[in-house]
Amino acid sequence: MAKFFTYSNNGVTAVVSEETMQKIQWYEESRREAGEREQEFLAPYPTPIFTFSDAPGLQGVVTGTLRDKEELLRGHQTESRFFYVPFSNCGGSAELLYRDKLDGVSFELAFVTTLRQAMDAFGLVRAEEPVEA
Image 1 (cartoon, one colour):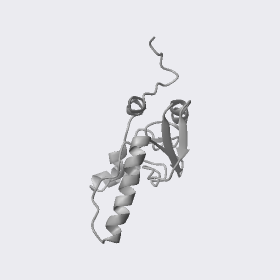
Image 2 (cartoon, one colour; image 1 turned 90 degrees about the vertical axis):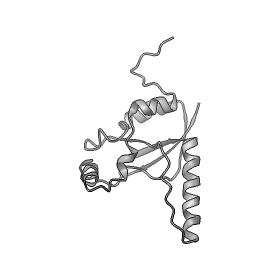
Image 3 (cartoon, rainbow, N blue to C red; image 1 turned 45 degrees about the horizontal axis):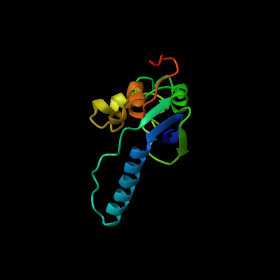
Image 4 (tube, one colour; image 1 turned 60 degrees about the horizontal axis):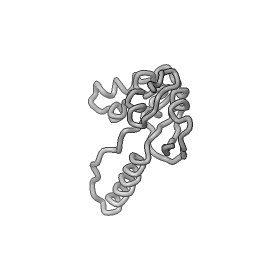
């Protein structure tokens, strides 16, 4: 059983592994320290962050549905912990993300992951897929 960290915002739930959570904690601490020293902090936010939502307008940019998340995390330990939730502030529609991309400012599209990537990263198999013996 693996441990995963989750956080939800505006109908989007994000899931990260322990390794990614450790990187996020380093990132947040380093960014805080840089701010205290009035130094610029340019490190990218840690990835992968897998996102799940049932909002129709977000399908295709989020990793999967909330049902997918439940199936993938079944039997694993989860803990809620605050961290950045991609795609949670675009009103449930990817249209804003794509418009920002055209303007060259879409930070969030760097967080697009697929369900297959989530399954591979966490060693998970969807219940509908046959498991070879």
